[in-house]
Image (cartoon, one colour):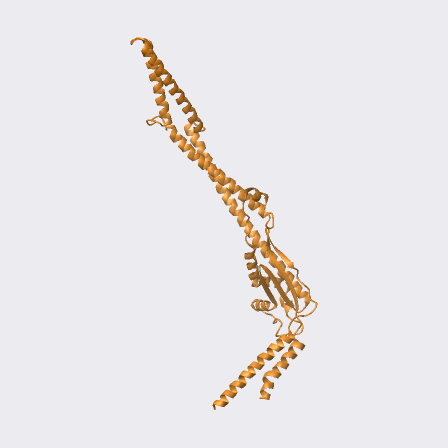
Length: 357
């Protein structure tokens, strides 16, 4: 049993210790922390018009950034700039903790997951980068920060470009609707030879009221003549004729206004007023839509001129002075405990088999 304990637990533990302290290269850690900030200040147009901002929530940007840091693209880009293969392949061969020579991009990505640890909480991202030289760890962390900032800038630029394009399309549509509405009003005026039917309606109503007043006066005058003159008095016939003319004119004016009969010479005034009001409402709606679209477009342009989202580093890449990894004592204890549990399990199995026999 002692021999098995020596061969299964002690010897592997000693070999592990020798490797950790004599072969394994020291690893230095550099830490960097950042978050995505969103510009909260509103532009002058937004303050005047109450228009909303284009920027999306920074939490979703942080989620994107968290995934980007673990992506193959980031690893490939940084490798192209500072040669991660050379940095993570130690001068003294370390097959356990070092990167294999001529590693593929997939192997490099897997090794990146071992050497770059990400902590994400409450919108804050903290990254720990390890390398075999303190300067290399800082370089990787700085490049990671730069690439992350570039991604946020690209996302913001794409969002602003999309917002401007959408606002421009909306503005173009609003301009066309306004042109069409104004053109329709102009055609209506030309066809009916009327600038504003409301003004003409007031004029016609005033004329009708005046004629009705004249009719009343003429009726009174005719009644007085009939009471004070003879039946064949020519003044009575003249007064009756004048009353007929006034009533005929009143009837003609009422037809124009659409109060009676149907206009045969043209459309009645009530229809003209109704059509003009409908066209005026359409034009007013088109004007308001145009002003709204113009305000949205100006807001999009104003937002495009300022950096609405950016990467804010609350902790710049640190430079290590002491190696923190590999954690030799912890690793040795874990390996020894695992070997002891393995040996104990094997011994229990052996004794159980012997007891059954």
